[in-house]
Length: 335
Image 1 (tube, rainbow, N blue to C red):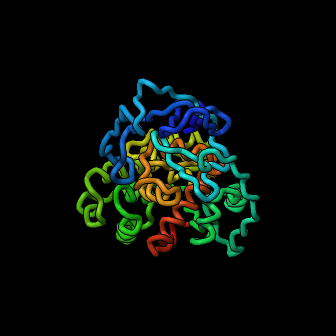
Image 2 (image 1 turned 90 degrees about the vertical axis):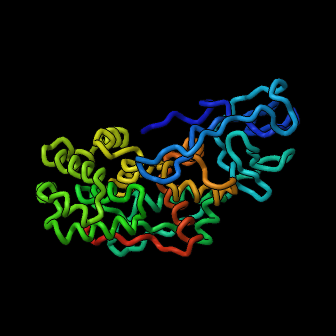
Image 3 (image 1 turned 90 degrees about the horizontal axis):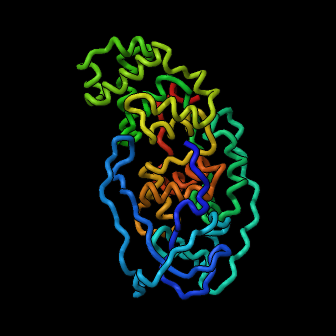
């Protein structure tokens, strides 16, 4: 799951602007677009691209034939800081400060409040340290001021949690929790062996689609046969754990990344296919609507090695804007 650094991986290009302007120490001479691969219409691993956006042949009245692109170095720390900023990505204006002004210094990091000492584990590991590391960013200062700091509970590392994440695919987390509660009432204990003994009618009564039945039974069989070992998964590094998860049928990138954050507590995961994260980043950075997954992955590079904490901050903003609290899962799923 490790991505290469953002620097010059693509020639990120800007909206038309006069020659001689500078961004991040680079002379900006020209403009263009990055193509978006597609926009997922629902979160989850079975989401399909809704459309492909192609680069325009002319922007800002300047013909493409008169333009050239320049590679942009890694995002500066104050990219989205300061008033008057126009933070728009890939084929749009990307101006950390109004043109002709010097970049403002990053706001000093403040001390984040430690998680409450209530014996509850929060996701990800190192949450307080990550909040401190990101607190110099204006976007995160604004989220914390209006919505508070995130407190999403850690989940148990095990079969039940991964099964619940399969249930979450393409439905709300509240609907998935209701399905899980019905299942627990019919499957005690909720373990691979007892789950595999359930017939189709029982699973349908809990809300399983035929596809999710297949995914869930495949997961249970992998655990029963020892192909998936949760203790081994906990000891693996991020990349190895991710690879082991996505090797399972029905566990795609989104499911694996959610499991890494909430069950394994990994601090540097960026689930860019998540609909809530796409919407929240667009809202918080002043972009036009939801941010497509490929662009969102590139934006997230700025917040390594605390991308999970950044995601939690954006989710906190998403919930607050909609007057919602963090969803409550069945108690047996929490660590």
